[in-house]
Length: 289
Image 1 (tube, rainbow, N blue to C red):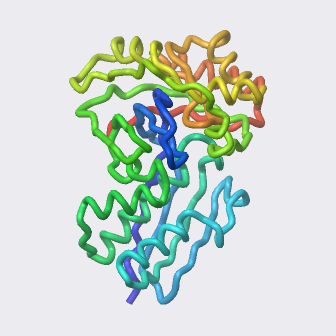
Image 2 (tube, rainbow, N blue to C red; image 1 turned 90 degrees about the vertical axis):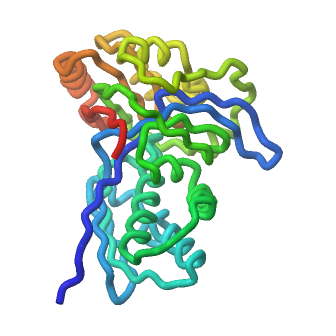
């Protein structure tokens, strides 16, 4: 009898804004961020097995090592917490660039936590679950709860939004890996006027106005030293009809938001003609997964 295989979507996330408020005594940073998902990402297949195995496929599989992977680390943490062995076979189709600011690894980890809890019918208190999630990675709590949210603290505070307008986004990564840890080490000043994002439903025009007044505080640090990220930002600014553009996370992925599908596709074609070796993807944001 064959065991049931679960096919799961592990979406990309983007920071619509990311504001760094302060540095804590433990070295971590307090932040304020509006985060949402996109309809593109990695794919994961998982099933019970006699022993643990992880097979990585997809266009960015060569950039990952199975033995030193967040999925393996997540499974080990789950086994320690539940004092139980989880023998599963996992196939990860890695479609997102590595260290790209889109939370691919965190999304993979959150997907695995949900899968293990469901497959093995595990019970865990929310307080314990939240502690486990943040111990795996800063973006993992947001990715686990699967909804557009205001994320604060060291990303352990996740407040879901009732509704966020779907946006047409063009994602661009110049295939430069950027170390999040290195970027945070370079922060020298902090945001003293964080965005107070409304909790009630707002229309698209109001959303774009708020986003254009907000920041990704890491963008200045990255663009000072990375000419390719600068090039992407300049492209959105000067050569497209985007209504809003920004770097997500600590980069190197940047995105432009467009009013119409045709404007987005026009920009995509233009950029592919300029830099056909970059990773470029048309997508839309998702309010929940």
